[in-house]
Length: 91
Image (cartoon, rainbow, N blue to C red; front, side):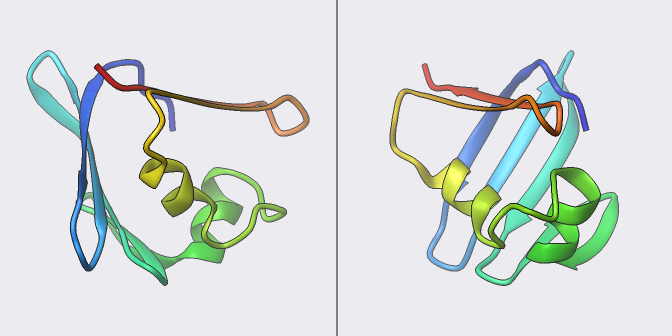
């Protein structure tokens, strides 16, 4: 998955929602629960499967949820071994 556009991160009691838009069109709409990730274009996956298919199976199951729930202005995760770069810059 590669996205370089603006988006929104919503934190709800049950899940965290990540929406990314390009030219006004949603290119990613993902809900991250305690035990699964659901995307509008794909079925839900458990966190380990999501990591294995999109990041690395070596990552902890809750990695993506923890990353998007950080309250820092800038969140940068760089993993050169697996060629992964995730940047979250909050306005």
